[in-house]
Length: 255
Image 1 (tube, rainbow, N blue to C red):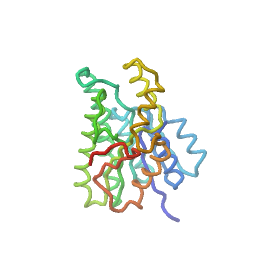
Image 2 (cartoon, rainbow, N blue to C red):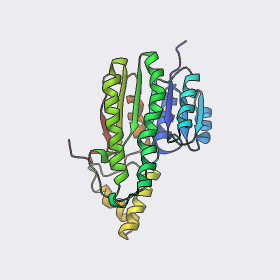
Image 3 (cartoon, rainbow, N blue to C red):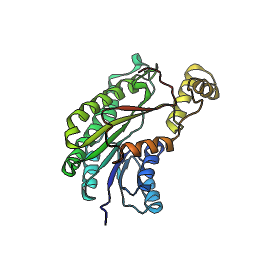
Image 4 (tube, rainbow, N blue to C red):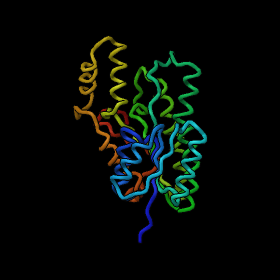
């Protein structure tokens, strides 16, 4: 009997994290799901797919949550795949960000993911292989105004992951980031509402203006992200590491 693989997915309740968890479950991965309220997603995936699912509730900014994720994966035999995902920070212009907001966002967007990764990597090293992927953003390559926290801290995480890719390559561990453009999730809807309120125009106008900047003239989908993420997290990805791969419909033109 083939040994089941284990994947850890953070930010797994909704959107891209949830879609990727379901995609991995369809491929036969047992799962450790983490989010602030992962129980509903865990129960639905458990009942919809023939896989084991463990749920860890809380924010990855919390050290105890990272330790619980590591422990749950270890009890399932050790993780071969890790998706690092989390909610986005507040929409703030760079000069409007307070010290407290910088500190809180840094805990969630940089220290939290790296803390979870530090816990899971030894399991991958013991197995002699592993795949790590973080959900980032196209704004790492092409920063936009009004989202200073996201622009800055996602770039910090991507560079930390690139460093880890160099260091962990000899262990057979591949590390990448996946940069969504405009993907149809609650986050993008909230983002559009924030911009509409700030500019005192309708949300539909913001949406149409956004679509006009995308060569494919449509938003991406969580399922599209999930298909690409599942490839990067699988053994089918045998040579891609240290990269940020864009899923953006051609939006970013910078190299």
